[in-house]
Amino acid sequence: MIFKELGSTGENIPALGLGTWGIGGYEAPDHSRDKQTIALLEEAIEMGYTHIDTAEYYAAGHTEELIGEAIQSFAREKLFIVSKVWPTHLSSKDLPKALKGSLKRLNTDYIDLYLIHWYNPDLPLKESLSAMAEMKKLGFIRHIGVSNFNTNQLKSAIAVSSEPIVCNQVLYNIEDREPEKELLPFCQKNDITLTAYSPLRRKVISENVKNILEKASRKYNVSIYQIMLAWLLSKERVVTIPKAASVEHLKENLQSLELLENFELKL
Ligand code: NAP
Image 1 (cartoon, rainbow, N blue to C red):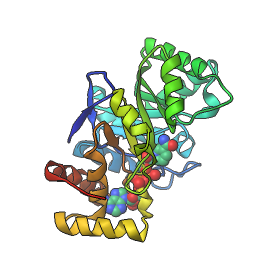
Image 2 (tube, helix red, strand yellow):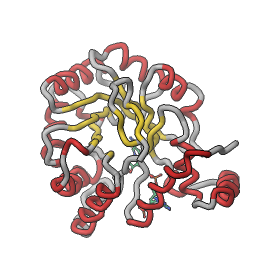
Image 3 (cartoon, protein in one colour):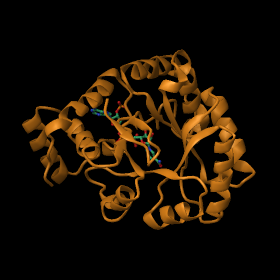
């Protein structure tokens, strides 16, 4: 595993985490594969996927429940669990309730990194971030971050938050490169971790980009998905969380780390 510093906390987190959207259902819970899913999550953790990304929204809480089951046989302090609060739960009254729900489902006393899932223009950011700071003081959250915030929204969050905003989780992959214009340089300059979600673009890749990836995959003798991950991980301040639902994919994605030593991809 490769580790990168989370924000400017001095704490290093695994640069390759595990995404869980679709694990145990999408918008609604799907219980049909619970046993296999828990076993797969346990295997993933054993392999080194100790950084796990989830959200209260995923499968209406069921994804958190499955993770909660899987983590029971591991030392909690070895794990880095990220969860997210949905934008309709951001008031000072609702946020603590949402967090307690996540903690209960995850079967844990604390979440390592708690993110605002999406910016909500109808609620003052200060109110949400103050509620998060309070939860941090009480020990229910270790670090605070945001997700899907553009640069201006991130700047506003930093301006009103009493606690450091250590991370912004956004769509970023070899094809969706909007963050490179402003957000990534801002994060790099201000020591904020950028977590790239949908790093494999859910396998929907244009012909043009596919050609570039295939050329690189022949050069390095790896899959195009490993190239996509190595490309992200080679960037300063970027960590990523591919979702994988098979041992083969989990292993393959971990192997992308081996590529990094001499990796160069010109686009
Ligand atoms: P993704 O990770 O880009 O792609 C997942 C897809 O890639 C799955 O179909 C998976 O198949 C496949 N895959 C994984 N490894 C592979 C490999 N080595 N070879 C071939 N195919 C492979 O998409 P994502 O799930 O959208 O993004 C990752 C995570 O980011 C999510 O799970 C979630 O935790 C987070 N996310 C956050 C937000 C947000 O708003 N903050 C939004 C979207 C996503 P299998 O499932 O069959 O293994």
